[in-house]
Length: 427
Image (cartoon, rainbow, N blue to C red; front, side, top):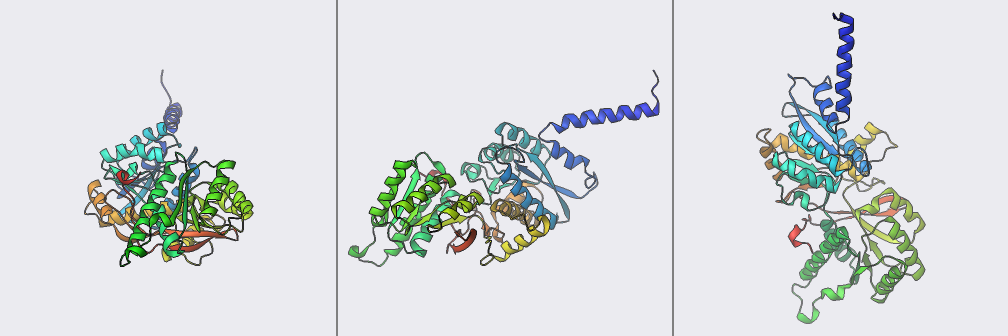
C-alpha cells in the first residue's frame, strides 16, 4: 500500500512520540534531553558538560533542589571556561538507591568533564564506585559520610564533616567562651552525633594540652576536670531529667547536644522547668533550619550556638564578601522572597570549585582536573575559603551562629582551619 506524504509525516511523528515517551520514563531522560534535544547544543558547538546528580523528587528533594538552585545560579554567571561553554546535565536520583545507580551509570556514559552531587549520603556512596572507575572528578555539596571520599581519589566534598563541626565547637566552647566545665550528651547508636563528639573531645584535648605548656605539674589543667559530663543519653522524659540534673550537679557552663528539633524542643522545656538556662547549649548544623528557628521562639531564654556550612547571616552584619555577593545574585535570580539556605550556597560553591579546577587544569582529562582540585588553594566561596586534604575533604574554618529574634545571627569563626578526622581515627 502506497503511503502519502501527509501520512508519512504523521507516522514519523508517532514514532518520535513513542521514542520520547519511552525515554521520559528513564532516569537519564534529562541527560538525553539536555545533550541532544536543546537548540544550544549541537555537534559543532564548543561545549563541555558538568553532570548534576541530585534528588529532584522523593525524600531528599528539598536539599537536592536547593543545591541545584545554587549550581544553576553559578552556571548562569560563569557559563564558560577555557574557551568552552559549560552546560549542565541533570539526572534525578529520586532519593532512591536503586534509581541512583541507574542514574549515575547513565550520567557517566554521557562523559561529563565533572559531576556535582548528591545531597543524599547513600546515593553518593553508590555513585563513588562509578565516578572513580570513570575518573570523573566529582564534588558532593553537602553529603558528610567519610566513606564517600575516603577511598575514591576522585570524590571531593564542599561541606565540612561532623567531626570538623565538633572540633570547631570545642574551640568555641573552650577558647572563645572560656568554659571550664563542659558536658557532652550523645544519643545511643547515633553515628553522626558520635562523629561530632569525637571531633569535640579530640580538639578539647589538644587545646588543654596547649594551655598546659609552661605550667607546673600542680598547675596543669586536667581534661576530666573540664569535660565533666560525657555520656550516652536516652532522650525520653526520665532520661532528659537525669541529663539536666547531671549538668547542674557538675556545674556545666556549656553542653554539646547534637540532636534534632523535636528532641531539643522537649529538652529545652525541661531545661526551663529545672532552671538550667544559664548553660550555653551547642548543637548541629540542623539548628539553623527553619523548623528549629521557629521552635526556638518558644524558648527565648535558652542560650544556643551551632556550627553551619555557610557564612550567610540573615542580618547581613558579618557576611563575608563572597557570601554577600552570593546573596545578592541569588535574590536577583530567584526573588527576595526566596531566602537561600546552606544547601544552595554549597551547590554554588561546588560549581565554582570545579570551574576553578577546569581553568587551572592542563587539559580536560579527568585526572588533570582532579589534580587541579587537589591543588585548590584558598578559593573563596559563599560558605568559606577552600582547600582540600589528601582524601578530598575540605579544610576550612567553622562558622558559628545563634538565633536572635527569629533570625540567624553570626557569633564566631574558628581561628584555625579544621581538618576532618579520617575514618580509622573515628571511634
